[in-house]
Length: 142
Length: 164
Image 1 (cartoon, rainbow over the protein chains, first blue to last red):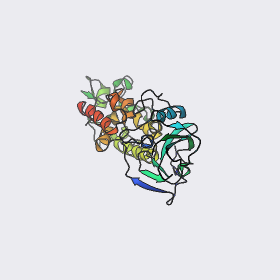
Image 2: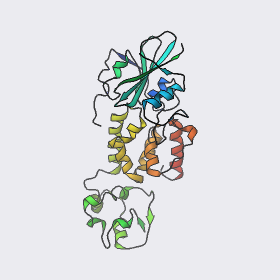
Image 3: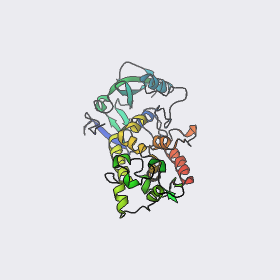
Image 4: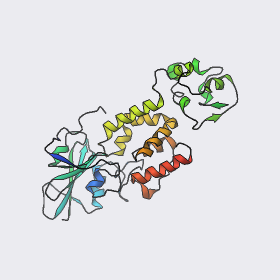
């Protein structure tokens, strides 16, 4: 994989860093509001994955993983009163990243081992190593 | 007599200096380690040739690693590349499949002390490499994904076996 700008749509004005880099959790955990595990369904078994959900790098498996937390697939990423949303990014059909919607409609993401950021739109992280948004889910909550 | 490589890598009557450079990849690196997994054997010429004490100024040793960065230097370079190109990834699969990480795995058990050094400095995603190289998995299922705890378990494993 040649080194390239991983986030071509990210600019100084459409995001801000909100916490320091750490290897203790990743975007999938962060979107699930967990900070004590690295979530990923790798076959080597080096990361956490919800029990009962297939350890497959597929959108179906990711939908099932967030489903264990009460999220269900929905149509759009708009802010809806009474709902929290997560978005799963994929590249060539393989999940790569997840973001969580904040109460003001902005989004928060943990960038791998790098920092947590807030970004104005989901598109801010598209077009680079994460690909594009492939799945939106929501659950009732403040 | 201490040998740093399996003498089966040498042909009958052949010393390491007689092996073409391109055929020495299985020996490079093992020669400079500091006592991990060494094998004992008794005497033929091949073993004598392999028993040279690691020394930067040893001309035979320099020829032995000709065209190859030293193990630690090569490891550092690969780690830097891997971190630059994979730090933003959440996929442990993608991280592990990166060419730099794969090359580290390919360095075999000689690289274990360096991986444990890395892990001792800061918890990180060395678990795939450790499992691939050692064939072991000392992490209990309930700790899966708990990176600091997994690091501690592996460090304990490494210390028990003299890698740290």
